[in-house]
Length: 390
Ligand code: KIV
Ligand code: ZN
Image: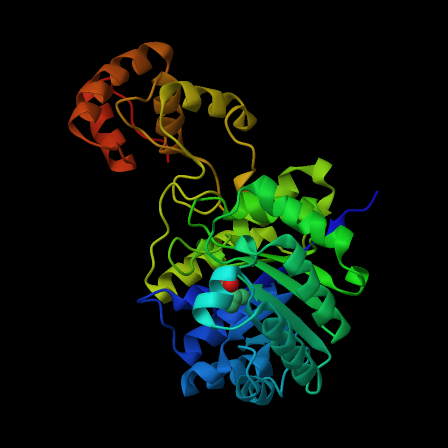
């Protein structure tokens, strides 16, 4: 049975770029947009055109260069925002306007000081107006995570009637549990008349570290678009991480879900975004962190050297990482030392290895990590009388 495709909506250049200190200029955004297109994302959210002349220009320039992906611009449910977004997107081969409004009780009461009925009216008006410029209109129900499902269903039904092609169900505050978020998507699938005319989209924030789990729960229950960012960057604790949701689907065939992403470009794309934004990737970050394929304890190293799959569920080559790393520390065993010594040109006999290992432990206790140069030195100190072949 062929797998169902979940569209990847990348918002690195919009929600991701909202992070303090991560501001990019148009040139940098163009480099990233081209790379995202090459990576195979289906939609690139290029910015929020009304927010500044710089953002407008970036959306306009990205619209000119992106060849495959849909290019999307964010708006509030405000006519002027939609006018400006439509103008910025005019060169896009596949333009999309992403408009919306807060739907939770908290947003309705405190942000808009209005009534639920008026929110529906504004939502419908915004979608109709956006529809007068482009065919592809995505509607976001901001804070849908904390919105009552019955009311959310009414909003969704109304905006589908007004022409929305995609319904974004953001867990704006990262509050939901995976079960709850999945149930919300299921509820909408089952209770919104006309739901077959629109794609449901997950947009999850990571305040409780659940963004990936929530997005996957949404996809399991019928969402066919996930909104995410490279390295999971975004407001506060960030957005759903693109590389994580892509690899979850790829590693779990029983989900019967896949994406159009070329996973071999994930690692280099992660580094490109990190360097452009000056935002380091935490070493233990899933999929793209420096330690994601590094093994340092003796037991794990021995296993990985015998067979990579003992301690790795992903072949590093699949995500563009050259190979698994065997890191030498005081916790490493003989197998790891022999493996790394061989890599730098020493084929050690068992007896030689025993001698070198003793010196190695003394050395490693004084140093956090033993590198290739140190191995040469350790072998020399061990006086076993061999020279590197390479
Ligand atoms: O988190 C959110 O609700 C958003 C919307 C503007 C789509 O980013
Ligand atoms: Zn968001």
